[in-house]
Amino acid sequence: MNPISSYLSSSIGRKWIVALTGLGLFGFVVGHMIGNLQVFIGPEPLNRYGHFLQGLGELLWVVRLGLLAMLVAHVVFTIKLRLENRAARGTPYAVTTRRAATLPARMMALSGLMVLCFIVFHLLHFTAQKIDPSFLALHDDKGRHDVYRMMILGFQSKAASGFYVVAVGLLAMHLNHGIGSLFQTLGLNSAKVRPLWEKGGVAFSWLIFLGYASIPVAVLTGVLK
Ligand code: HEM
Image (cartoon, helix red, strand yellow):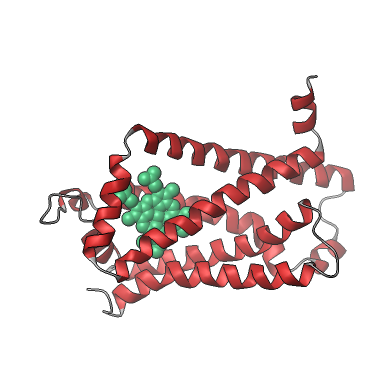
C-alpha cells in the first residue's frame, strides 16, 4: 500500500480528513452568510453579488465541485470512523457512553443528515429554482437575476421560513460540536486552551444561527420588504 492510502486508512488520517473538510465547509458557511446578509443593505449589493458569482462561469463550477468533494469526503470518512469505533468497542453504543455524551454530540449524525436534506431542498429552491419556477423570471432593472426579490418571495412562505430556521439551528448545533472535534484532532486539548475553543465554538455557532435565521425572520416580520 502506498503511503497516502495507508495514511487514509488509518484512524488518525481519517480524523484529519473529516476535520479539514469540515473546516473548508465551515469557511463556505461563513462566506455564504456574509454574502446573504447584504440583503439588509438592499437589492443593489445583493443582486450585484449574485451577478458576480454567476459571472465566474467555469471557476464557479470548480468551486461547486470542490465543495461537493469536501461534503462527500466529510460524510464518507465520518461514517467509516463511526463504524470502526463501533467495531472496536465490540458492542453497539454502550449506555454509559451515551449518557456521558452531550446533546450536540448525540445529535451529530441526525443534525448532519438533516443539514444534507436541507441542502438538497435549498439548491432546488434558490439555485435550480425548481420549487417555484417563477423565480427564474425575476430580473431587476439592470437585467440581472433579482436575488433580493427571490429571497423576499421565498421567505413569505411560513413553511419554507420555518424549515430554514430549524435547519440552520441544526447546522449551528452540528458546527458547535464539530469545532470541538476539530480542536481535539489538532491536539489543542489542554486545560488552558479547551475552555477558550469551547466558548468560541458556542459564540460562533450562535452567530451562524442568528445570521442565517435573521433573513427569513426579517421577511416574515415585514422588516425586509
Ligand atoms: C437564510 C439562509 C440562506 C439563504 C437566504 C441562502 C441564499 C442562497 C441563495 C440566494 C443562493 C443562490 C445564489 C444564486 O444562484 O444566485 C444560495 C445558494 C447556495 N446555498 Fe444558500 N442560503 C442560505 C443558507 C444556506 C446554508 C445554511 C447552506 C449550507 C449549509 C447553504 C448552501 C448553499 C449552496 C451550496 C448554494 C449553491 C451555491 C452555488 O453553487 O451557486 N445556504 N443560497
